[in-house]
Image (cartoon, rainbow, N blue to C red; front, side, top):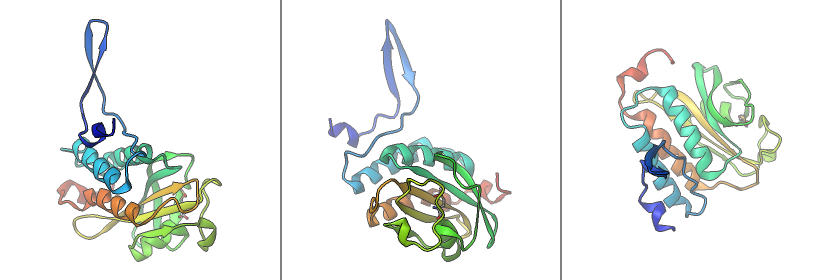
Length: 193
Ligand code: SME
């Protein structure tokens, strides 16, 4: 029931005949919850799953998977800064084939990279220069991913297959999630993994 969504059971067990087997972490489907509660639950789950992790790509892959399945987005993933001030390249994502590279200033992602600000696009057809990797994309959010030194590492891009799928709750929730990258982690300041 709904109460089960509040207290997440992280380690699951199942019975197979007389045996008890432990199941891997499960991606939660949070579409039945009010958004703020859904994001709070997702954030708790991610914090648990990423405990002890200091690898940026591992975190990007895990965040992509859990965010994508929590809300049933069309596309969820990261564009990484590979040439600061110039070029983003696709990182871990979930969904159909994403563009491989996006220049700073191009599309919603490149615009967010230049401004280092979140961009909420209720209708992508109204955003000049929007890059359509998937023709079904109708609305989009891009949030900047900044490390503990204040350096832009990536942007997180989520796409939905309907107009106005997102609001400020999503922006807030996604910013809280990518705050993982802003925690002090010495290993993060090495070369991009
Ligand atoms: N729509 C993005 C491009 C990335 S794909 O949607 C995955 C943009 O305009 O930057």
